[in-house]
Image (cartoon, rainbow, N blue to C red):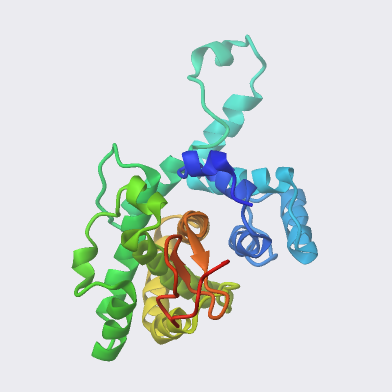
Length: 295
């Protein structure tokens, strides 16, 4: 169930993960653990624990905290993380403890998102909240994919997002508009769904565990190839920069999708016939015209 605390603070990663579906967390675990193979900078015990959670399809509050902590840890560059480890291990009151500046064990999630945005050359203002920056990252990936799409593929995506031109998406809708679940919110949700599913398909060999209507499912299928090519290109950049981006980039995309999904689900109702999300005030489904009375 959606927590009221999350709806009051939709930018909170902790609150989002606390109520996230196990299937969505499974995707994050695969990104963090390299599909269970482990990573040099990932503690073996943590890796084993998260892989076990995926096998059992169940996550405790501690497991969800571990997922957040690992994402935030990967968000710091290697040298910075080494410094944090050394700094946090110093005896209290020692000479070095007094001389060296304090350092948190991890960086904030907002810092992770901003780092990914900078890496992908996504412009943002320092004052932008995490929802706006996430939206910019999604649009950047989709916009880059457009260059590789056929006219038919472009038309399918634009039709699904209800825009005449991808540039018209502009900055992400304000948090108030998104939380209200209006047209802008649905468009942002569909955008996050298309991009996150393509990233998962390209990196994990499978799409997201989706329960969406046929229209969105068709659009997702149409653009998997072009978006997958762009994602592959991003990974070439990640190899040249830092292996951490192989974790943070897909995790940020997945979390952006999870956040939009949670916001839309909290402010809309599902059609009992086709599963499409509709305004809470709607009497009939926009997709199939089925009655929404009692939905």
